[in-house]
Length: 387
Ligand code: SF4
Image 1 (cartoon, rainbow, N blue to C red):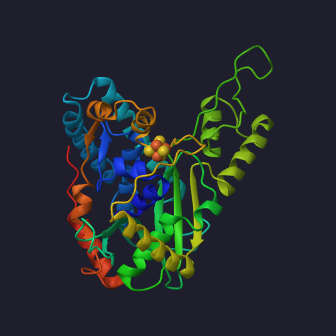
Image 2: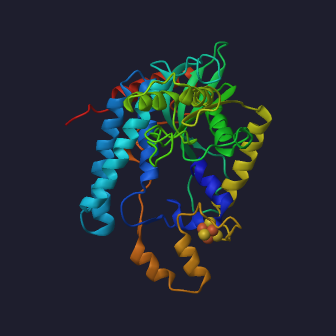
């Protein structure tokens, strides 16, 4: 069971039952959703940089891998190759990934965790992309399962200037998260709890490293016959002071012109204090929250391993977060769910081969130095970029 699967189970058992790899494992036919692979590609780039590799090369390597897997998976799910339009959409997403990651390193520089821009102390990166597998003490005497593992991937491991342990999570987002929602987040607390078991020492902080899946917008040149004709719009769009300044120069104008100076100052202030594209939160990890997370997780796993009653939870927000809503709709309306399943879904596979091959568990690591050594060895095994 993955840490995110626990969340799916708590959110709605029907959704969990349809989509979990431990249950019906249904995935929709067609190309994989771009928001899923784009987030993973950006993770690969940020993770590689922590291990001392060129992030842009790592990104390209990951995109090549996904391209190959997407073609194979599409053929398996649909029975025909992907169309030119679908490949064009894929390529557009790949270009966006490159631009976002390039902007990230332009913003944070070559040492992105030095604390100069991220509102956290200087952090020393130790390891990245740590996929773990922890056997859980669940009573399975009356269960169909033989063993229950808790699995997940922790994006980054750091130390702070006092030697405290910090774990990090790279989150690609389209909408900004509120720090109050993140502070006791289930996933973050869970990753801290799991890391504590792996390295046998407490985790002190959590770094939320938010990356917007967007690039700065270019301001429009104003039309019409008014006095501002031909000048740039000062509309409050998602852009940066640098991008805006470059657009002024490209428009043959002077950034120090009073028409632009106030707007540029406001953009610079937003870039510094409330950046639209890159957001970091440095959160405390509460030992009490970690203890309660374990208790809660053990109780949930106990239920999940004993064929729980499959209830559903149709929320007033409309279940926008559900990947199997059409199946649920059909079921609620008394329509032919089996037909829909056969028509639109296939059985998915669990995790990526690469992630499953490089897994740490309390049997393979017992301290932070073991973990660092393991992460370095895994990193050395990665294939070279080709083509
Ligand atoms: S649509 Fe809502 S109620 Fe139905 S399975 Fe999805 S999350 Fe559950």
